[in-house]
Structures are given as structure tokens and as C-alpha cells.
Image (cartoon, rainbow, N blue to C red; front, side, top):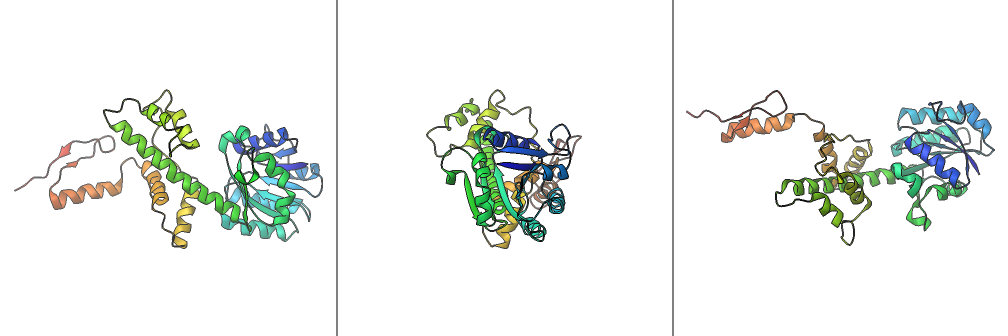
Length: 308
């Protein structure tokens, strides 16, 4: 089997290598000339046997939709495009329609595994027509983890279902990471606990909270129990927001994932305007002390109100 791969960054590059190890020939294109096998999408299309399979791994949004549109101009009826980035599921309907107008099939595939996927395999969640899924199954089998197919791969449903499943997966991930993080902070705050790293390590076997995320936290704490080298600033890549938006649209209560998302927003504030207002209100109604603003966020002196 021979496929094309557009986007050879951290994920795409590792996926190319894993596919090649499985005996699948891959021709890759990337904007970075040091990474690519061919110099253009035209050359990519020409290198592939018909009917072609092309997998896209570029940033979601405009880069993805532009790539789909460009491929629509260069591929032929009967070809198949698999979109494996972190696109919003609503974009899949647009992408599928763009390609369908040219007689080209489309699958969306949520991919989980990060930088570890090369060795461990990738969790795959696919949306689209069953015949197209079956056609691409050798590719999916090469990328997924070893073991039963159903433990690393799912045909989740129609177009958009794969990215929808990946969106929910990442929302759950937000909540899990936040729970571990809050537990870490509480352990670190208690003076009688002297081995925070050891506590987390002790949970990695035989406990109900063991997981790969826990293993990764133990790895992060190894040698830096205070995480002194890391600033507590956390971005979000979109899926958490989309998950919360979908919870609202479908009237599904999601307090844990919502709180985890908002905690990331809070991490980016040097000095929270909302908490300034809370401090001011406590001072106004209860005469509670406030901390005046200093040269660094919240680092001023404690000032008590003047009573008559």
C-alpha cells in the first residue's frame, strides 16, 4: 500500500515513520523542505497510485480547509482524503462537501497519542462511510496500538463523528489533568508530606486512580518535585471549549470539564480582575483587609479599612 501524507510535524512525522515500519509506503509533503519527500501537492498526487489515499495532518481551521480545497483540485474521482488533525467536527461537513463535488471520499479521524504514538501507537476515532473506512483499514491497523482493534480504533459514525469523539476525549482529558493537578497542589501545601513525588508514584500500581496520565505526572515530578522550572501558564487548543459549547447546546451538565477549562483561563492572568472585584466587595461590606497592588501582581501591603 502507498499513501500520501500532508503535514510532517511532530505528529505527522512520527506517523509517517510508524507507517513505514509497518511496510506501508508513504510520500510526504510539508511546507518545510527539510521534512518533505516531494516539493508540491501536484508532485504528491503524481507519486501516488490510483485510487489515491491522502492523509492530512496540519493545524485545524483555515490551514486544513485550504489543504482540502487544494487537494480537491489535484485528486481524482474515487480518491480518498483522511483528515487526521484536531478539526472541529462542524468543519468536516464542509470538507466532505468540497471533496464530494469532485467525487472524492472523505473520512475524519481523531488521533490521540501525542509524541509517544510512534512507539505506542495511536488511538483512532473515525467518522465517514463504512466502505471508505474498510478501504483505509490497513493504514488504521498500522497506526493503532498492538492488540485487539476495538481497543485502539473505532468507526464512531458518520462524517464528523470521529472528530466529535476526539473532542469529548480531550474534554475528559482536561478534567483528569485538573484533578491530578489539584491533588498535587494540596499534597505540596501540607507540611507533613515530604515526598510528593513518592505519593504519586505509589499510586501507579494497584490503585483506582492509576493511569498513563498519572505515569506522566510522576515522570514530570522526577527530579523537580516543586516543578520550579515550569510557569503555571496553560493554553487550550480548542477541543475543551468546543466540548463545553456542545454540553450547553445539548443541555448536558458538565461541571468538571467546564471548571477545568476555566482553570486554564485563570492560569493566564497575572492578576485576576474578577478577584480584585471580590476583594473590593469584601472590603466594602465587611471591612475585610485588602492587599494593595505592588510592583508585581498582588504583592503589595495588607491594608485594613479605616473605621470611624
